Length: 320
Image 1 (tube, one colour):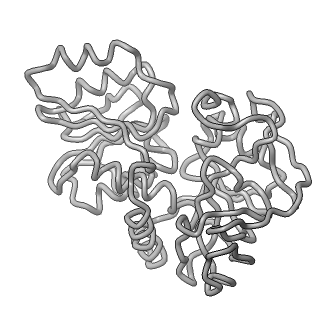
Image 2 (cartoon, rainbow, N blue to C red):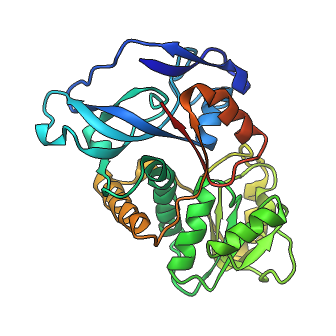
């Protein structure tokens, strides 16, 4: 089968299209004939080598964490009823950028018949992070939310989910007025620049969902209202500075809360239930799957270059 591998860590040019043996599902696994692969910020971190110290990857690694397609084979202990079913699947830290992918049966979610594979890999991972990230922040209807770094897949979904859940205000940071207008169409009420400033912005937020982190993170702690909560769901700008804890302590009397969030902490049954609900909502048009572009698998280098250049709004999708 054809697959994308990381030949060398670093820039997009380290990716290569190669021929690999067809995978075989093991016990508790299925084999999916891949129709679409989601490509996002996490994949660029893997490719760059930024997570090499934390994740068991190396040269020859096949990137890609979420796929959609049809189950073509099942391993021992897996019900044969999965054969021929259209599914979304989470491959883990890699294995998705290929014509076929092995996925644990516990990481599958059935797809509605009218939901495209491209839309499935746009909603499946990002939508769940948005949902559980807001829940981790204990967001409640009527509260104000700031989504930092809202132009990517997770941000686009978090904006929609916060608006649907009754936020009194949904502010976003983004890189251009054009992106800001698109985010308004999805539910944003206030568009700010990357520093978090903009005309008419609220004087504070109950919740900040941060997808960027990086050196500027402490500045957004200052934008929390008393008893406000910040949850970091991504580190696209790198880890926060070591002094951000001192910044929180300096605001001790405001009772601020800071947390990180990873989907690894969510029970599988809960993940599957939320994804099934979101896929159904997307098929009804209640959630929008924002797909920037669908590219063939052999253009993975181009896809990663677009991500590195900040040209992507929403999600990029590869199709074998």
